[in-house]
Length: 222
Ligand code: GRF
Image (cartoon, rainbow, N blue to C red; front, side, top):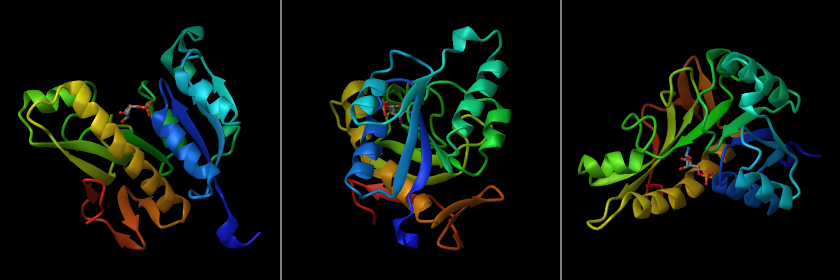
């Protein structure tokens, strides 16, 4: 095996449909993304994405938060499960639980999340409706390193999506999701190639500190 054949071991956490996970898995399977998805883990046994992953031949697991008396116990059990796969990158892809600081520090500098807004605008839920209510002309999605602050970690790449006159939260979400499927693989690829890193809380690309997130507009990197 040459250095370039090396695949980055990753674990993906999901809670629902898992379309971002599926896109990453497709690109892994066509050889376009140098990763090895060791497991897809969900906090919901009925997550649709688990069926998709397992149909693609990927190992799946679920862990029910209700089986634990306290949130911290669930987070510790999840951290243990994730660690058992020895991932070099943990990918949150629609994982709908807030992870505690112990979990986050265990995977510090090697955990990414995708969020459907142009962070720092609209951390949290209902981002598309909030963008519409604010009359934003441009909305989008961000990939960021995970820190203990919810949706507050350093942003790596953003996709900007124009808001159309007749958009509903659903139609806007659909177009944003298409762009998520473009920027998440890009960020994961940069990390897998060793080009993207978080050092002392700052994003570095190719040994240069990024002073602003990479930007994609209408599917193109300017
Ligand atoms: C995406 O919009 C992602 O940004 C957010 O949750 C959604 C997950 O979608 N964190 P999917 O499960 O990947 O289809």
